[in-house]
Length: 204
Image (cartoon, rainbow, N blue to C red; front, top):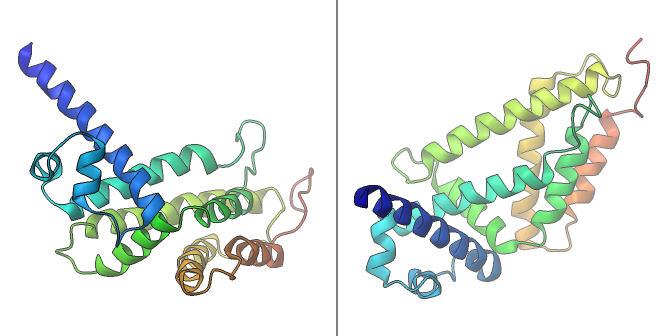
């Protein structure tokens, strides 16, 4: 029983650390976030904090995973039971608009996504799996839009999913250099070029 209690406390402490680190990175950015600051926020020494994650890089992977969980809950689109075409267009534009409000997390994501191309990087598996999952979910949602008559039938859902992910990642990089770039506006413009108003009768 004591062992289970210690495990539960350990899990709770990891959650507290990840949440605190997520807030710090969102506020000051990846490059200015220190283990000392995060450790202080949760009442630990730097060594005590790293005991839960092993390295600063692994902590940042956990931060990115938590960010994904939060974003999925907030920006997953409308309820599919109410709207079978609960659409990728709406949810991606809303998500990208939100990203402009958390520059620190965008910086962390962009920095790590580039570095993690190396197979031995702590975030390599995370990004590999994330890209696959994101493309799959987008392809699914785009397919529902096409079935509802909101997308030209000759367009490839797979290719559009890959292009949309590339657009969002590329816009984030440009935006970090020039905050005047309106990421959400550019994503919305692409959707406007390939979609049509919802047809209640579906495709002809």
